[in-house]
Image 1: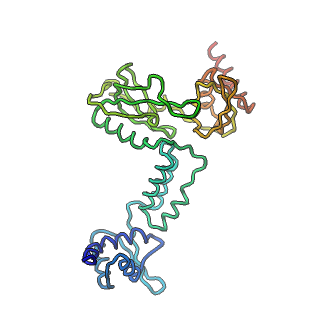
Image 2: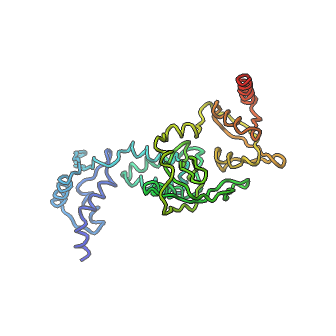
Image 3: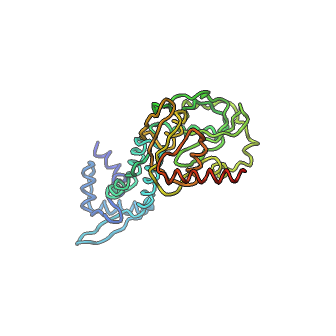
Length: 329
């Protein structure tokens, strides 16, 4: 009886063999096919194998036949994704800061299943990204899904909004219970997801880091802010609000006020060493791409941030501030 049930699965097992064991560089012989089917409790002969191959071809699968070393090798040529495409997907997952290391590994394993076992080994060699800052919050993945659902169903949401403290812990921020929020768009910038929404309490457009949102609940209320978002340009908004840094990378020593710990961890990650300085300040040493955008970010923090080293970067800040003084005389 079991053998009869297995026989019914024959064509599926054969397809699995082609997807997992063949690619442009690797094929299987008729003997390989018969042995593989036998391992799965399925009896087969050359004649029936040829008939099954024709069935797969008739269904639309492109299976090539090539003679090499006196044997014919069969290969599945058409796949949903080619190897370069899978490499792009792996790189995108691994490079995404908002996807945790654990979730990245799970997703990459699924991507590997779209390739042959031989190609999967090549993908594994692609998976290393040096010093990549990854979120430790597993539910970002599901936050995005919940927010998309609220947007598609035209519903308001409520949630708790968190921030970093000096112990590098995520805690509920002051006034962190958010209600009457109308989600309109998800924006991606500098490897982070942001929710762009209309705040019904203040009557203005605001944005929130998705990885800092907890306990998202979809409300049975229609969204507000339709007029504000009728001519809303997500690209222009992202360009205006979210800054990305480019330039030459340098090791920079920066002094910050304690109140800016969340800003610093958001920018540089949790693995930075925080060196206390007095009661109200701390110092970090970070590798950054020094550009006008980065220096503008430092200056924008006012007296809460000060570059200490190297002297060349300190001089650049002085030059910018001098130019600003001249400009606003």
